[in-house]
Image 1 (cartoon, one colour):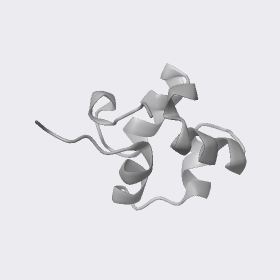
Image 2 (tube, one colour):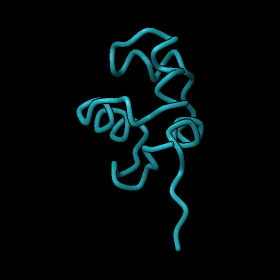
Image 3 (tube, one colour):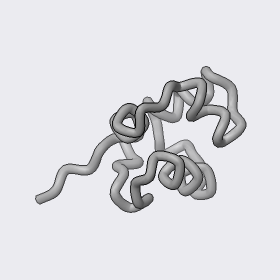
Length: 65
């Protein structure tokens, strides 16, 4: 069974900071941090934007708690 990276792990693997990632989906730093803790609160559109920016298919990122 393949283990999927979390949102935070995908961001780190892409070499991005929280600041860079939050700008991609136009949210505050605190909101982005809350998404890393509770990714199921993100919209599908936000998840797709981040997955594209992280160069990881959306279905390969673990988006739940």
